[in-house]
Image: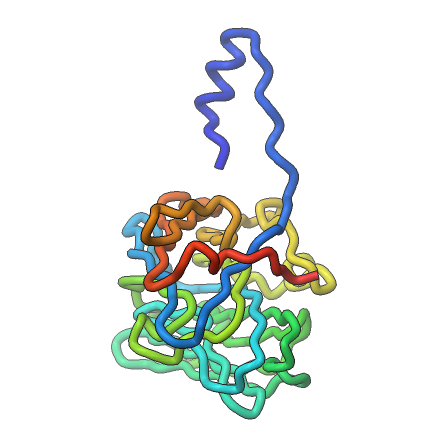
Length: 247
């Protein structure tokens, strides 16, 4: 993320601010389906109260149940028979659950995209697959979504259902329904620069870009509004960052 203070002091010195590098999607993360995943702690400065939108690209040949993205209160999960499940919890004890069937096989070894949206203002829950809505429902009139305690990518919080394949460009918006932006987000099957949207993601993990290998783990810096909630890999190896991205 650029630092506006740097640009301010450069202007005082009469120096120009270097332009931001162009958007380039070069890497994804490859998961072994056994014990590899990413985790992050929730930033208390960003707590969702009413809406959440989740965007994730994935590729797999396994038909096993796999958690692409999960928090302590929501998850996006791919199931057998080409199904996709988006589950959310709202206090005091409301569980909103949407299960849909994808029109194509998500385990065909090709890249696919999911946008999952829950809006407790409009009381709707919807899943988009490869740029098109494939199912929605009217949810309970809940007070709001419960605060997440942690994030995970690639597993059910490290307890199982590990992803066997690749994940790329994971993004999350707090209090912003991104249904109207699905065309720009899916972009005909090629990830786009989400910072150009009218509402930038709260968290945007590039899954390789802006990542560093510490010697024991990959640390991925969020490129969203919240640029402090970083993902850290568990049981992954340096070679798990691969040059394999959606076309």
